[in-house]
Amino acid sequence: MDINEIVNTHNQEENQRIKFSGVVLFGAENGTKFEGCYGFANRSDKIKNSMSTRFGIASGCKIFTAISICQLVQNGRLEFDTLISDLDINLNQLDPRITVHHLLTHTSGIPDYHDEESMTDYESIWETVPMYNITSPKNFLPLFHGRPMKFEPGTQFSYSNAGFIVLGLIVEKITGLNFNDYVEENIFRACGMNDSGYFSMNKLPERTAIGYVGNDDHWKTNIYSIPIVGGPDGGAYTTAYDLSKFWNAIMSNQLLSKSLTERLLSPHVQESEFIHYGYGVWITIINNKIFKYFVMGGDPGVVMQSSYYPALKAEAHILANVERGAGLIASQIDEVLFSK
Image (cartoon, rainbow, N blue to C red):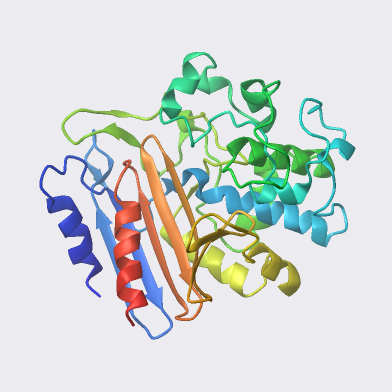
């Protein structure tokens, strides 16, 4: 499989004005491996992306939130059928029948602060609420607090960023810790993801890619386009190597017990013909067999997809600091692997 050719074909398409800028890492148990780096982590200073570059992963880190909740269940501090109305969190306007399971599977019906079914301009949110004020999960509450429910809990699937914000509030309520601190200690450090973290955009560490909005001729950075620091619904930074460590930790039950890992990765709800959703993770099922588990994310100046193929014991991680490319590259990798 020539992944380099896949990326180059993407970049050479007619009228393609947003060339892929990021990294691709592929590895399989049979020894097949590919590493590719493209574009600049910092365009102004001409610093190229490398395999050690840290990238924002937007909603790709919802799985970290799901694992945090599962760890609390594992430790006997929470149940999947716990009602949010019993957790003493100021969410009185929400349906009291919502459970933790509903939140994890996007079936809660909670109104979203960025409803991806009807809103396309994520950047416009910060015209009324400054992005530099969004530093913790509670800062998101005014963005959806008081809005009507979309539907009754458990009756539909509707992707909800706000639902994962509530999950982050639950982690903070039960542990007494800042959500980001909990994840960094109990997930990142626990599986050796030493280059990962919830970094503040106004003081990014070394080797961190700056996100770029617009095309290759007319661009700006994304510093005013997304919250200044990530949280339960997205915004952590990581590397392709760290994502490889993460999937290995999941599959070897380092972060959760075997039974809870299986629950995390179970297809709890069907989103489309082949795509299902577990807890914070998407699942592709073809011919009644799991083809891959994957997480994906996209924000202004960010796009990524990270996949694990259980039957092939293979993985593919595509991280970018532009807004396009990762999904197309991932789908072409899927096509090659599915034909094997």
